Amino acid sequence: MSVEDIAAECVKTPARHVVVTGGEPMIAPEIGTLTQTLRSMDLHITIETAGTVFAHVSCDLMSISPKLSNSTPYEREGGRWAAQHERLRRQPEVIRRLMAAHPYQLKFVIAAPEDVEEAAALVREIEGDASRVVLMPEGTRADVLRERGAWLAEICKQRGWRFGPRLHVELWGDRRGV
Image 1 (cartoon, rainbow, N blue to C red):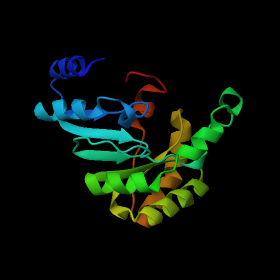
Image 2 (cartoon, one colour):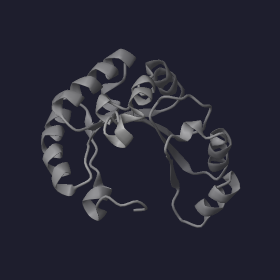
Image 3 (cartoon, rainbow, N blue to C red):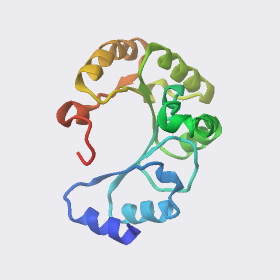
């Protein structure tokens, strides 16, 4: 879709908040133009990024979701992309630049307790604000999310972090377009 097509879709809805996501939206060639266009429409803009690429954009919230080691695709396509993913997934300098340039949150997808420690180490390394850390349980089934969410919410309370449920999965299951 062109920037003009996206803007035309946005005016069809009464929503005033736009989430620019992907894949990785920061690699889109026209991401700057898109966010400037959305800004001119007086929309609240959140960008969802893995924090591996810096681009000049306009946004009200940079939602930085660094990929933890639990995301490395060792099983997919025989591990074909695992080495590249592992090499690129962690970019502390890019995250620091994004944090300096925009209001931000650091959102981590957590599958196991050791993921919490990996996230905590990165937050310390990049000197992230604990009040801006959000942990979300990993999972595509409501029962898994409930089980992980129970212990994860307690960890968030202990550390002064926020908990982010995956409400769309709870309500509609693991489906696209909801």
